[in-house]
Length: 271
Ligand code: HXC
Ligand code: NAP
Image 1 (cartoon, rainbow, N blue to C red):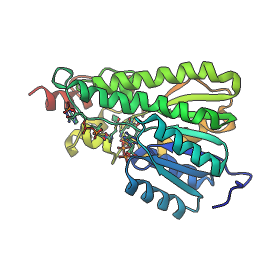
Image 2: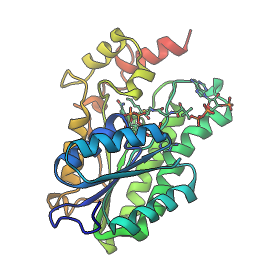
Image 3: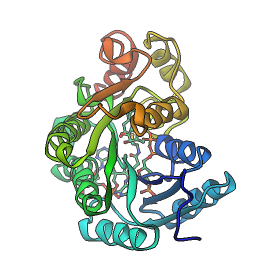
């Protein structure tokens, strides 16, 4: 590993970048020639992601940390930046989810999701702030639950709405320093843990697919392409934006009763 980056290569950190959508984003930046670091809780997943990023020809590294543990995240970021220097792009997408009705959920169940998604996002912001290049940018990976109430998702709705308000307030606070902060809201993405948890059966995912105006589920690459734009000079005047990348799902399909995920979750939980 060299300490001096290639001139054209940026330094990208993806929090929760070891599987699913976030890993797709990490791989997208790696393919573009950026050097990429990832972290999450599982050593095995971190090592696997690093190997995959290197196989794409990128300089890659990672560390193990739970976003709920502020000091562990800060220490990981500090050590990374001692080696690689300042961060150009931070993608923050660690998250937890399970379907459960509000009344049936323990306080600890609610807390666990809020702590991962919302407090965890704050910990990442706090950890990276001293190490972000000016200009630099942060991209939060939010969810449709941030803007649409969804049965069985009170914890995720509350947490992701909070994440998007972090985007907006920190965009105001950090804008004068040249740091842009934006959110991307992926729609339902194929072959992901999130979809497997909410719509485990093929027929359920098919119902979701039909409720997307563009009539397909997303791919991690769909989400990456918008992150690539937000991280690029083309988005130099974009900050505080909360951008759906969802085939139009959030226009109505996500919450329409009688179709889609709303129906799937009501069928599963209101028995
Ligand atoms: C009710 C549940 C539950 C369930 C866990 N809990 N699963 N309650 N129904 N299905 C409760 C537990 O009983 C416990 O409460 C509390 O939640 C914490 O559970 P732990 O297992 O101890 O927590 P932990 O090991 O920290 O794991 C966190 C987790 C887990 C969120 C519960 O599922 C996780 O690590 N998930 C990460 C991966 C993931 O979820 N990926 C999908 C992201 S998709 P008690 O009271 O018993 O102590 C996404 C959006 C998708 O975010 C959008 C699609 C459109
Ligand atoms: P995923 O594969 O489970 O991704 C979650 C990532 O976060 C994993 O790398 C996981 O790794 C890490 N993580 C979870 N808890 C963590 C913690 N406490 N500390 C550090 N890292 C943690 O799920 P996904 O479905 O691809 O979701 C990725 C992102 O997209 C999430 O922000 C989700 O809300 C959002 N999203 C997903 C969909 C969808 O259709 N799937 C739709 C909208 C939004 P470890 O297990 O190793 O910690």
